[in-house]
Image 1 (cartoon, rainbow, N blue to C red):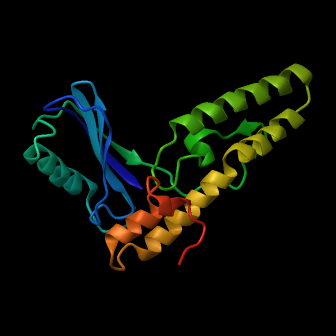
Image 2 (cartoon, rainbow, N blue to C red):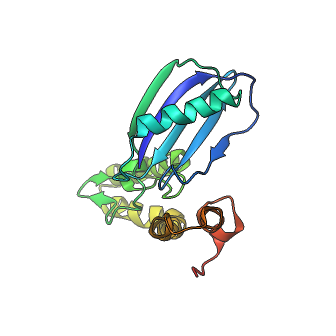
Length: 194
């Protein structure tokens, strides 16, 4: 997905992150991540959705200003790609260990990946150090199986949900779609996909 984000002042401090599910955020969502008296306001949308992320972010920002959530000022901007296509086929290539986003450990629905990056980075360091200390490069190969044991089921389920969500995005009842495919709803956990 393509992410676009602004760092802006809040009208009043917020205690919780705000998530905005809207059909116009094709394959993604909008957010307000509070940081004291400021917040990161952003959107993520599927690539190739025929939409301009910057325009959608501008419209989202205008909505948040009119709702008196944020002030009409921008401290910083950022944008980039968020990899949401699941785990790489191989996490080890020669003596290179992929972790975090490079390993495909960004959650396919939410785009979250800091926790996975920390865990996989820590494991990569431990396995690399073990390989160097012992002179046995099998430790590097063990990294892949350990990372997969931690994340493969969760990421596989999320990737399947993402694919189903994208197939049905334009098919009608958007609230029902959200209840089946967004992580905060009970339907996300269900393994049946009628």
